[in-house]
Length: 215
Image 1 (cartoon, rainbow, N blue to C red):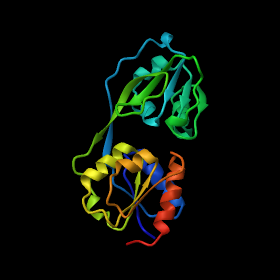
Image 2: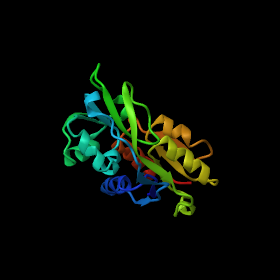
Image 3: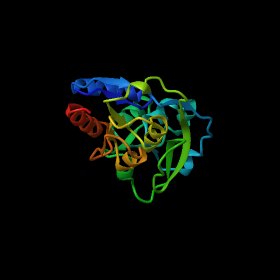
């Protein structure tokens, strides 16, 4: 069994690692980024019909300013984000199941996207960044990637991994999307993308690669 390396920051990394262990994998967390709240101004809630939330981190790091928006229903990207919104006191109007690109949002509504500083635009929604993922200069653990499978949760993580790792011929990449796979650049033992951009699909792919013969 090849080891699995998870690059995403906490607290998401811990959730992914727990799910990986339930699949019988041997995960190791090597975060490339750390999350931090941003100073942001709350738009007039009366100008919007709802909120788009594409990461639970927006709820976790949005701070007390979020209280002014709790009268607006949330359209969440997935179940974890919906759960975070409910726990924070928001009403959830819809929950997606396939990433931000697959969200089905109500037509004709004025929507406010609570986002990270680095985010994919959501059609018809005004984005307000409330947190950022800051690159870690020298992540611990990258020297031990040989022979492993690396889970890449975003294009930005793929680009950063490509910048940091020179010797990559024995490393397999399990990417959450085609964009994340392409961002890793070349030279890896193999690169595959999950069939849908969810943590569950990514880990199913990672499990298959971990069970395959190593270098």
